[in-house]
Image 1 (tube, one colour):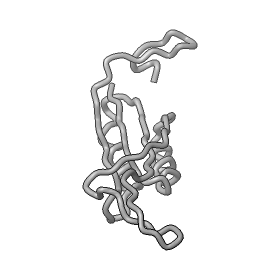
Image 2 (cartoon, rainbow, N blue to C red):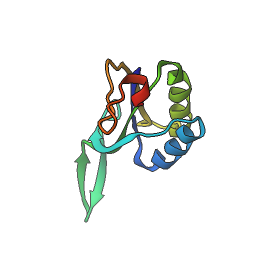
Image 3 (cartoon, rainbow, N blue to C red):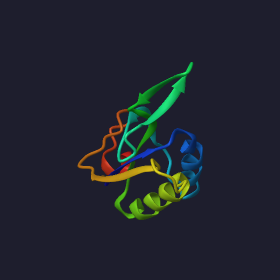
Image 4 (cartoon, rainbow, N blue to C red):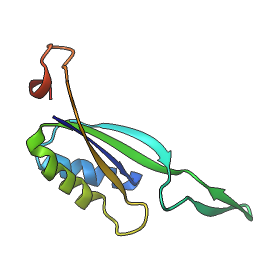
Length: 112
């Protein structure tokens, strides 16, 4: 099993959700987060004063899947989230040791 974590721009969330649904992935966790990478934030103007925005709003998606679904999922997220501009985000894939469905007690692949 794998845990796929993706950090994407907030306005791309619906596109990503649709893309993963189309490939048969059910279920994801979404968290609103802030951060920066190479982009290093940006400068904004408010009431004539310039100020630095260091942490940009992003959306973090977490999806637990079976090993054979990883490649399709990563490709679907990357295609749906891409704008071609700086700050599009990143995708991370982790090994997932155990999963348990609390309601039924099912474990691992059956719990997904």
